[in-house]
Image 1: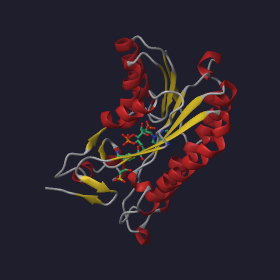
Image 2: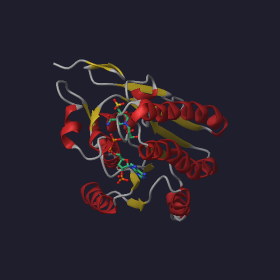
Image 3: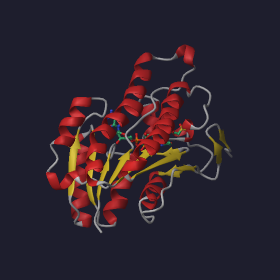
Length: 252
Ligand code: NDP
Ligand code: 8X3
């Protein structure tokens, strides 16, 4: 049966790969992000390749009123959202706390924590009305253990871990599933963003081992939505074979 899948941060990495994975199964998609050119291109490609229906919403998850305006303006039939993938997020900087840049900190806190909350806050009432739904929060191994210089990024992903647990408790009576997927290192635009566009530094993050790919995580996001209704994956921590936890990567 066709579902409506709402994905934040679909212009790149996990979100884009997840959009393809869900479209391949014939689902309808609401894709979001700040880079509208990429949203329009993705939307056209998905429609052409999979004959699926797609709505693209161009907003910054940090802007609460933009989030609410776009979601409230969805056509009625698109408000029956089956799956929300809270994926939009970033790391900005990798510095010891004493050298940290408060612009980086604000960006990460506002996007990874507050953005996820704003989007959830706009969509949970719709799921409540339908007495069904599945929220998938993209956490990280950085939300399980802190690594050197990870300080604020790790804090935001620990917050995602806690918010996910809180959502699962509070949404229990409403029949809404809540899943966290917590990946280790995956080769996306994540590191380029973390190092403020320095591609050389970004590439070093993936040197000497086989990192995960966006498609690996997309497969797990999709898989978590395919279980019978009485089953819910609560927390799925996944790394490449070369990674043991958030700070141990075996490089050749
Ligand atoms: P990418 O940089 O490839 O993608 C990030 C996505 O988030 C983009 O689509 C971007 O869209 C969107 N985004 C960022 N900021 C905002 C914002 N303020 N408003 C709306 N959208 C935003 O990285 P990944 O795919 O790797 O990251 C996706 C998620 O996975 C993040 O939450 C990240 O923390 C997490 N993660 C990543 C890991 C990795 O190693 N790659 C491992 C574990 C977790 P746009 O710029 O167009 O707005
Ligand atoms: C992103 C992966 O290893 O930079 O969450 O924390 S890592």
